[in-house]
Image (cartoon, rainbow, N blue to C red):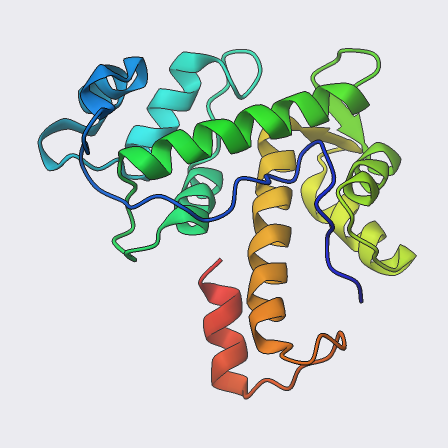
Length: 195
């Protein structure tokens, strides 16, 4: 197994910088902060329900259909450094950059502008992100994230989040970078269930 490279397109290249939480110096002037504060409310954090409403209002899921709540949970877990189950302003901004990158990447494979892609297009998209997977793995991924052969942007995001998180977790355990790791059963369950 090879790891995803730092290819332009859907795989976010911004790293893991930024601390969660409320505004830091200079953030008050950030135009996104006012919007974030209005969505986050009193606790200064965004949970999955708030993120779903926010992304739906922004029209990022394509049309008027809201992002799936599970996809919102996945996006939060991807960036949730303090393990609160919520995201602060810096995480929210980072997620915005990630989603915009994925949206551009998705649209580059949605040739007919239908708002969906098909299995072979998903496989090609994953290949351009640097994922080198077996045909069987790619076929399973396509089946898992498609509905009647079509993959919506929402499902595309869920796929990208899961692949990124699983790859990051695998990479941390693959100390020798050989594409192989040994998991104890409990560690494996914790890894998979945290995504």
